[in-house]
Length: 151
Figure 1 (cartoon, rainbow, N blue to C red):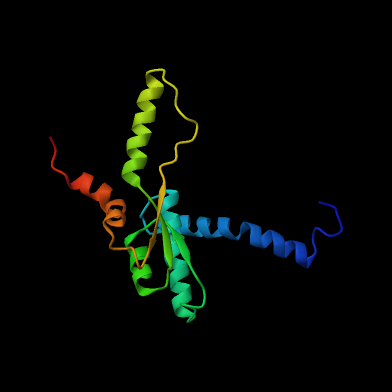
Figure 2: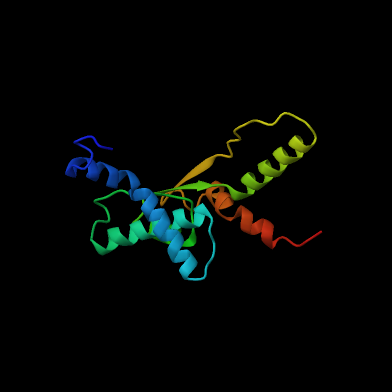
């Protein structure tokens, strides 16, 4: 820390760029807490940053000039995809994540081997494939399961 180049403008710029993403997540978490949304999941913050980035592009007339790929697929992100502010979404499959997680937990409890890493996959969603049945299944599978009548 006593190195002569540590407090230079260039190095501080590098440090600033390295912590920028963390700062965005921290601001997002703070907004969620202040708004009494109390959803502290990383996914909600990631979705918030995708929507915020899309709004910045729209307000600065950069849509079409800057390509934006966001993670997950909240309703607001899907709307931004439809408007053309977001070019692609990298969506997880919450149903498969839950199913594979419970399956792995049961295996572990029964003393069976469980992989260290379980890839539940992602789906790349664009304006062109948004209405494809496979994409719709990923987007709404968890919602369909929640709405299904109980046995």
